[in-house]
Length: 234
Image 1 (cartoon, helix red, strand yellow):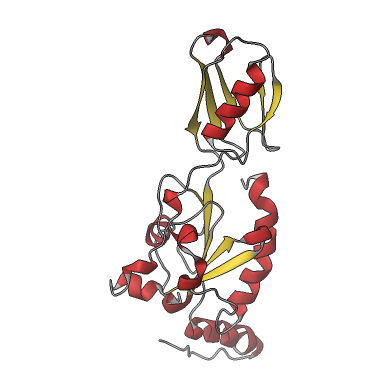
Image 2 (cartoon, helix red, strand yellow):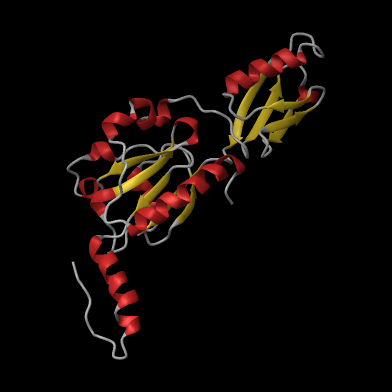
């Protein structure tokens, strides 16, 4: 199930995927050297809470207020005494600060810690010419090659030199990052095995040969009274 936070972004990307699957080559790409270090080395960034995460709210001196809560689709959590709190988008440390301020009115010198017990909103999507396309949980640091492995590997029809990662950029606009999967597989350029971010879409397009066979099947084989026994092979 796609979380609410990523739904609008995914809808934006659907058209890109449809166009990319029909085109001889994916266009409007952003080269790796222009994406920026912060976008590539994602595990170095501080984690921000998202809808679906499970949070353990612990009070050192007021254990009766301890709670295990799940961040709702609207990004909020419900707690005793302080009621509704916006948690999504904050780091655990930032949320701790907010809670200390809120509970200071109700509790003398509240000492609180926020622990993320379950990362419920972290998913990536692998589509195109892979054997098992779909959504996968993003647990820890996951790279491009690891995501392909989760999707049960590539089909023979994959265009390995022109894979694309569609990423949420500034103002939720899709950012398209080209990856030469062939160089990753043969080990000649492992720098392209970048870390993935939540809601990244790993798109493996069809090879030109595969697209030509689809065209032959749709416009020649299915429209002739006698089925020709030919196909284009790589």
